[in-house]
Image (cartoon, rainbow, N blue to C red; front, side, top):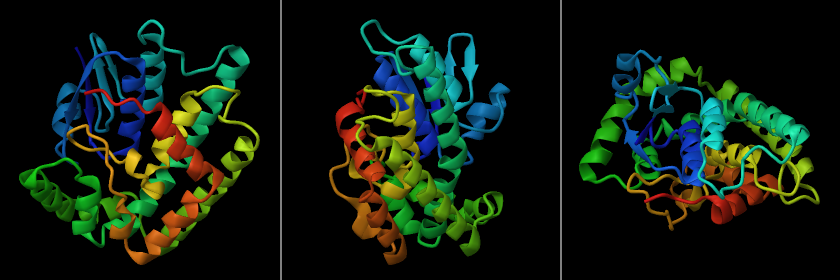
Length: 258
């Protein structure tokens, strides 16, 4: 069986997980706490990052590569994620790459900027589905890594403000694409929509988008747990066409494997 190695609350891991669930190919998720994921990646000689997909002889460590591989290997009857023709495929690939580079890093930076100051809140949001010991371990781990995360991602108030500006600019561009269209490319769900919804998760926090370690659907909105300044940002982004689109995608297209 295929194995997907993840940090459960990583939005890039969610991107890969969603593609696997959508493809209906059976797989096992191997979930690790931040830092401990290195035992799964470095010890196998495949770098330091997740997601990592092990599928037979294949070891894929880039979320975009995983999406393309999974799309080729999807179950019969599952519509492809990259459009109906070469032109659509080219546009889906361009948008996916643009979102990976412009949206994903900024949403991560913004969420960490607000939540690293309140580890209990971070654990409540990111530790969904963990038992008491799992939540305790996550809290200890994030306290230990807090300084390194801030340094590694260069998280400062100025950088957070720049990150929010980049998120809003990206949303403005996708808002324009969604005007009069149900999807980002053409009239069908593609990897561009999947990527948009997954990578905007840290700044929208729709209950449907929050990963539970036990693979159940979150029903309680976490927004009231957030610091007031972050809460205001999330509320304003949810109201955008892109924010509403992401919620629809999770409700209509996010098949969760048991």
